[in-house]
Amino acid sequence: MTSLGTPVLEVADLRVEFRTDEGRVPAVRGVSFQLHRGEVLGIVGESGSGKSVTSLAMMGLLAGSARVSGSVRLRGTELLGASDKALSRVRGQSIAMIFQDPMTSLNPVYPIGYQVAEAIRAHHDISRDAARTQALQLLDAVSIPNPAQRVDNYPHELSGGMRQRVVIAIAMANGPEVIIADEPTTALDVTVQAQILDALRSAKERTGATMLLITHDLGVIAGQADRVLVMYAGRVVEAGTVEEIFYTPRMPYTLGLLGSQPRLDMRRQRLHPISGAPPSALNLPSGCPFAPRCPLAAPVCEAEEPPLTGAGGHLSACHFSDQLVGLEPGDLFRPVSQDSEL
Ligand SMILES: Nc1ncnc2c1ncn2[C@@H]1O[C@H](COP(=O)(O)OP(=O)(O)O)[C@@H](O)[C@H]1O
Ligand SMILES: [Mg+2]
Image (tube, rainbow, N blue to C red; front, side, top):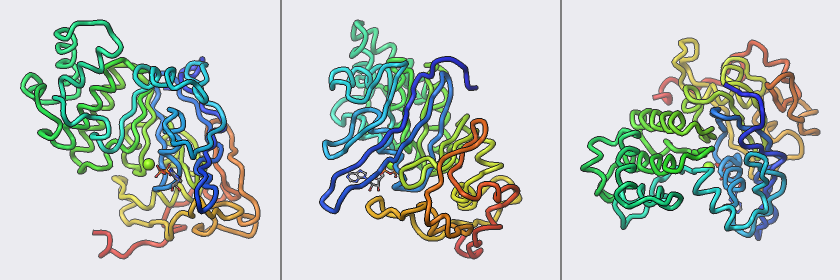
């Protein structure tokens, strides 16, 4: 799907550090990626790996305690350091964001149709009636049943999944170039998750937007993304196509994530999760931050943080990437007992 030419969004060496009473928190440590038109890029990693801070930094949405550096270009225009006025225009029009909790985006005191219509009217000089007609079409496009009836409902009258559809309709309202969805299905149960992913896909197809799909769940990425970034401790530790990440991972952390999740693939019925927890960003180990949990760790891993390197588009940050060829999660990580799998 990657088209050549200027990327829609280009992030280079993005760094975010929070100043806190406990000390400096390097939450994002040099993240770079490009998004091309029509592409879906997945970002996956355990909680605390820096996924949300990356997306908030791109949009200028972090608090004053955050020091942000690097570059975020939307069609060549630098967003880092842009004025609030310029950024709020970008946020409404060029880049739409969808969060885990739809109520962070919806106003509880207005009917949903009104909110979709106002999102349209914020950027287009059209009448209330025309905006309402378009709002109905958008609610239909995200598969809200009986939109003509639902349009006057308040957010609290809808289920979580229906509210998230409304947020997706609002995101579509202005034909954004980029949709950033941060854990859009995490709060929902599995069947609703699949429906929301369908709605996101139709939003992407209808608007032609590129999408950044952020999740801790590799299962969400599988059917959706073209390329994937795996994040750990604030940096990208593996990048590749979805096939490369799922079938030939080159970083033990990625293999561990694959082993942590049930696969449709019959060979991987038993779960082999990674033991331990990610390091605190306040106290990163000096070498590879995954070394304390890594079955392949050797002295060099504690001494030196490996750079992100590789051939073609498949990059990994591991001193022993070559040793991963042909390994299954169960070759490195211990199985959980059958009882605890249920
Ligand atoms: N406002 C903040 N002040 C200090 N640390 C923060 C702040 N926001 C996030 N962090 C830290 O930044 C790191 C990355 O957080 P986040 O991007 O939210 O993770 P993810 O979205 O991958 O779960 C975490 O260690 C988190 O504690
Ligand atoms: Mg997050």
